[in-house]
Picture 1: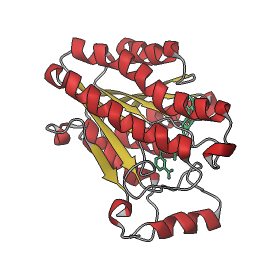
Picture 2: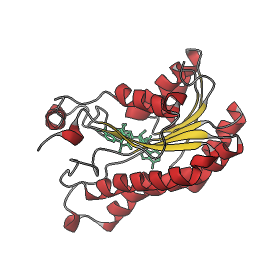
Picture 3: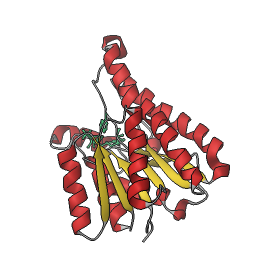
Length: 252
Ligand code: NAP
């Protein structure tokens, strides 16, 4: 198992990619700390992992709060004796529309959840990992804001996800010598509630943007996160890892 006895925080674990990651990381031997705002869903996923001989705890909260980032690290340390990995994956799309029509409140909200929360997570997680000799942190970015990802009406989201890549590169260079690897994962369109799940027209539109003519399953993205969190990616840091069904190499 690729994550045996690793203690790993997963945010956005109540739904979509984060929920699939929680189940897969546990199946790969990790002890997982699940985070998101909705506690009913977190409790259900943690319960299912624990009944299946995995180890999971959860704590609900808002990734915009510094205290929540610290509390997740404290929980991992208390329950599992330290912190080896983090999949900082919580995110929102926010309201869509051209920037001239977009309210500042929406801009601020999207930047806070998708980018400022990454700053808070890094501040909490890196010292815990350096103290024990290293670790691996993965931030979920997106094909939006990257090559061929100029999606209309997604200015705030694109800015937040492109900003994450810059943050990851700087963090990676600052902490590589301490043994902390920090990478970004850039999913293409993925079938989740945020990715249009339940809306066949949206799913078809997004699927057709990809050279593979389909969207990813949440598990396919979680598999890439397992790779980045495991020793199989031991020489990778500061990388924007694209898992997008060819979106970034499409011609038009
Ligand atoms: P999702 O099913 O809507 O999941 C989003 C998760 O983020 C939920 O667990 C949600 O939990 C959590 N979350 C949102 N705001 C939060 C907050 N303020 N504090 C704590 N948790 C919060 O969407 P998804 O598609 O799995 O998205 C996961 C990540 O992948 C996001 O960063 C997204 O931008 C990225 N991504 C998605 C796609 C796609 O096509 N689906 C493509 C590229 C990148 P609560 O509501 O319970 O708080």
